[in-house]
Length: 417
Image (cartoon, rainbow, N blue to C red):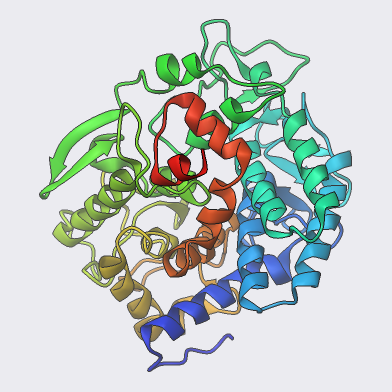
């Protein structure tokens, strides 16, 4: 699927892009563990071949469910992959049930994310659990694997990451106290699933008070300002990188989802539109920006890795930004999808879909593809097409319990209550 095929209708083009992008996980996952490698190129001081990531693996599980559903690979083949992965996770390093950011793909031993960060990562674990719960919901013909996934979920001690003041901490090693500069999980950002899954745990839950008295109590949680006519409910000025409002809703269905603070479907759409509006206004004059070329989020960059956003715009477009927005802003995202493939594909398209990022002015194209950027493309395109991943994950009792315990409401919660 490496070559560009022009002239496809919109549906066929979306399918082609989703299928090719899923190849990152189908053909590039670690051969021993089945986990997703962090990236395909351009590593910053670690071994590309054997460094696997927990969050990217969760995204990759959802992408492989799509591959099985669409018949891109045999269902049994994907189930075999899930079984191998679950077996690996059952013996891999965990810290009170919480997985680290990086593992060695052959041995399951922790690899430090950075100096001093060699313990449990609660946000990456939440992404991993989202993918695992989606797999348990999809492969109903294999109740044994579902039970093993539930055991992994029940073993996660979300409460072990609670600080005395009620804040939930991002990282923790059980042999060391929280460092003075340890990072609490406060919003608005990609970590919302920590609270949903943590509140939904019947074994080691996070109390709802941590959501209402810590997560939302930051100056950058509520926004409410208008940007080019779009009111942004949550987040920092101009919204920040798009992944902040995309990762939470790969599995949790935001349509009609509300709580005391926001309408989360409106948040996901508004964030995409605000990001697009900045690129169209293009205050920094970057060549190539426009209605068919917008989308700023965290990705590789000519200087390394950067959290691109309207307030940190280096002239780098990241394909996952607009493509993963398709469920929320289809009319605005589809021209980007077509432009990237039909017009720029000879530069940025290949065996596993689009490269991670590029400069539209022609100065730079990333050599890399990243698990956390490729996975949301496949999931976003499928949720736009059928809502499959939303139905699977949001139908899980762990998700429903967590949302209800935190005070959320949605049509799908009322219908299944």
